[in-house]
Image (cartoon, rainbow, N blue to C red; front, side):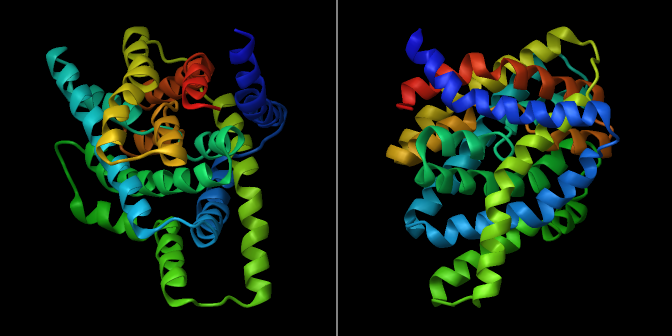
Length: 303
């Protein structure tokens, strides 16, 4: 028990304390989560991904394994949820909401900092690949799920083209392949912004949680929370073995799979009117309960 408390205090609690600062500021000011989210999404996160991918020693094979693991594990949990929802005779909007809240974890705001604290820079690099892949999935597969019944493939594709992290990843791959050298002012600017990305995302999580409201639907929220925090990492483990993940890659992959629902999903649910109140509360419930499941998972992974 002392060991678990130590893991919680050193790796999980700092994230909640920093998020708490955002929560308090949002409570007593007119701070807009939308503004912070746009800054993080368009500037800080792309710089962080570029830095991690250009300074890590990951091979192309390492990158492909993590990307393959991410896609497979997300789709697998989605198929399980779809089967459960159909068996429950849930209506279409609720099926979409359940899929969105369970398939996509908070791999950015929560996951990057957690991997850095628990396992170090190498795990952070793998976690960043998981995060980048998740962003692509949310803006393609997530849009399709949110738009079930009136699927708009063109809008999904255009949404992907507007995602800055895609260009950050492409630029990093070109940088690594070509031996391209950035001017010193540019490289230092990217490093400054990259170093600010993780704390900014943690504070943003607190701001977004402060503005959430209870929606009822206790049974559905319990299902979403249990599947997200328990079933998702359990299903991800055999997928990780299948893709040959080990060491820092295994630690990052399972940790990312065990995270609460992505805050970004609330934006998608609101945009497409897919039970936004339910989705928001699923984010809150899974986030608040996540220390109870993530702490023992970190212990098992060797934090």
